[in-house]
Image (cartoon, rainbow, N blue to C red; front, side, top):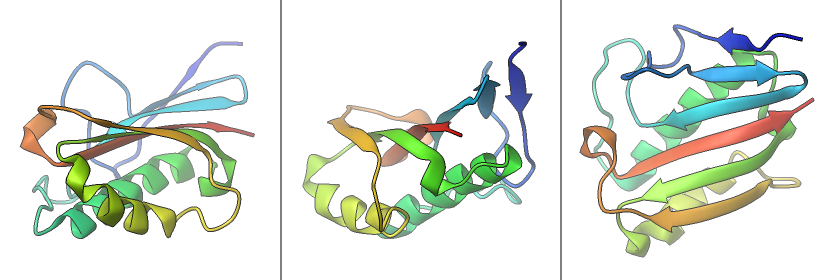
Length: 126
């Protein structure tokens, strides 16, 4: 079975040579999302809570485009610029996984695309 490239206008277009997501069999690999507004292309960066919600909404849009949802997510990777913001990011992120949260790692990095403070990717399985 061939891989299927997933694209939706409901999430920001890729800013490099990658796809928003790739469906391989029953597994969806969603590229890291940053807090870009899909309609305007503007960064949402008022505060880390708003950034995290924007990232999660972008992930949700890509998942939905592939007919998946947060309940199908088995793994997330979170990249943040400041580990001191872990608690705030975790609080916003947790609102999307109230039951049976996926496996996850959170890593502090020195820099992210467009100098954002948080980027999240995920893997989902049907």
